[in-house]
Amino acid sequence: MRTRRTPHRSTRAAGIVAVLGAAALALAGCGGGGGASASASTPGVLTIGMTAGDIPNLDTVLSGGQGYEGYRFVGNQLYDSLTKYDLKQATTTPKIIGGLATSWTSNATASVWTFHLRTGVTFTDGSPFNADAVMYNLDRYLKKSSPHFYPAAAAQAAISLGGIKSYKKTDANTVEIDTNGPYSHLPEDLVFIYMASPTALAKYGNTGFANHPVGTGPFVFKSETRGQQVVFTANTKYWGGAPKLSELVLKPVPDPSARLAALQSGEVNWIEAPNPDDIASLKSGGYQILTNSYDHVWPWILDTSKKPLNDVRVRQAMNFAIDRQTMATSLLQGTADPANQLAPHASLAYRSSNDVFGYDPAKAKSLLAAAGYPNGFSMSLSYPTSGSGNMQPGPMNQELQSDLAKVGIKVSLKPIEWATMLTDFAGG
Image (tube, rainbow, N blue to C red; front, side, top):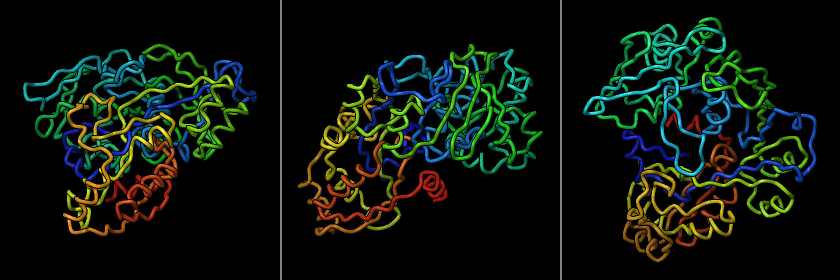
């Protein structure tokens, strides 16, 4: 999971074992690399092999059911939000810039926010985007008494909208959002709160909209073959400028070996997260390798409601037991950075003075003994076999299992499908 710097989630820090800061890694086949099938060699068509286990839901925030990959590949293509990340550069952590809002201001305590909307924007069904459309979408996410409130979307959106107290339209192109106290990160939290066409939502209903998604984004839904691929075409009238692609094809390929084979055979043009052991051969084969450090940690999230994990010394011991450097350099071949605090190096929240955890198994054992567990303890861990940001979950979790066993902590690993894990996590 990507680390969010949202105030109402910050209390979780003590319950997280932060392992690595992930380095985003993508591959694109260059002219000399491998063959090409007809499906992935058509000019203007980009075919991507996603790490997702299935096609993400096409309904606004529900695309996040497959993690941030759903937002990246589906949500950001079909929809816009009031704000967005500046992704037209790759040299620094992206800043928040205007999306469907051109500007915004807040009061002195950052508890009342005013968003000025972009004018002249239409949804891809031709209906107008305006303050009424924002109210409709926020009602769908937040207002239980609204006839178009959608519990499934509301549950997903709650991660970002939990701090909102009220909202209103002040004129046709301006909305005001009041929060439960100071909320300096509201513009960032709105990045994935997508705006859908109220006309299409009224026509197809909450449960039918995912089969007929309509947003203001750079791409338009064309077709879906369940479990195999989804196809988008360019929105040539996009307010931000027409995409350079004519068509975008997304294929779920959760297994890294299968993704590599799809790239090398020409079935896809671009993949994420190949097996690090394959990178050298891909480079020598003429493929382009792109890496970048980004604001993401690869954590274990612990149940701190009962023993032994409710003892901070036990959690500290687990952190000191992890050899992050070896995992980053040996297992992952330099495609990740050790995370010795919750904020990774690419995060604006990173401070070197907070690097309090390093590899110190002797200290881990001492902390366990002080907490009353000199011989360690046993625990179980569910982990997703694929999905957004999970890199190489099997080998990585097995290495963590080995590190912890050296200080007496015996971990039983229980693999689970990504969407199922997110559902379980959201449900407590």
